[in-house]
Image (cartoon, rainbow, N blue to C red; front, side):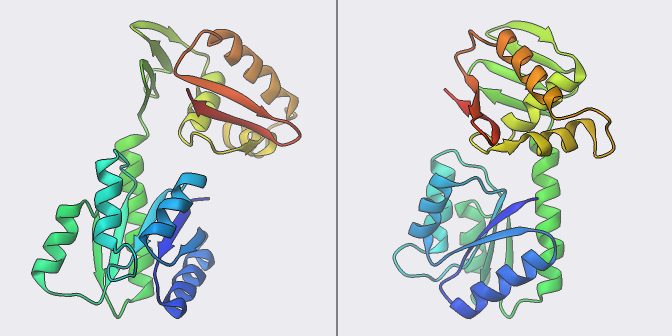
Length: 223
């Protein structure tokens, strides 16, 4: 499930946007201004941001500029009452990916959210880079400081899935369903076996590590 951060100081609009997103199958979390949004991003992983522009403490322009200057490429859609071309131009120059003007057609918003998320996946999903380690989804290859090895498909997809969301905890059941499929006859112990194999392969890797969350599951962390 995609997780979206909605940044809006109007409580009624924030509640509406969250409701519409959740109704359409997304996980939505709210923040009242750019400062709260940055704090949320420090503590949780999000796939996308929907942000108002005019907000107290830190507005949408500042939020996006700070994200882009720090190297964060998370997709951002701005929603605002400003409809002048110069305002829209400033939004795109700050690093915004899409722009909607209030009053919002929520059906159109959902279509744009889906398009942005698909576009982000098309750009990012084929290859992941962690320092000197590169995961290439097209060849199931992991390259570390110039040395490459081809992984068995299930091992690669398991690592790639977790590495796509560094810091996010995946339960064994989630990993089982995503990698082996809902109708697989294997049990979740299979996940543990593959995790142990991956740890053995990359025990000397200095860029990423697989962490066990006791009683919950696993996550990949950047070192």
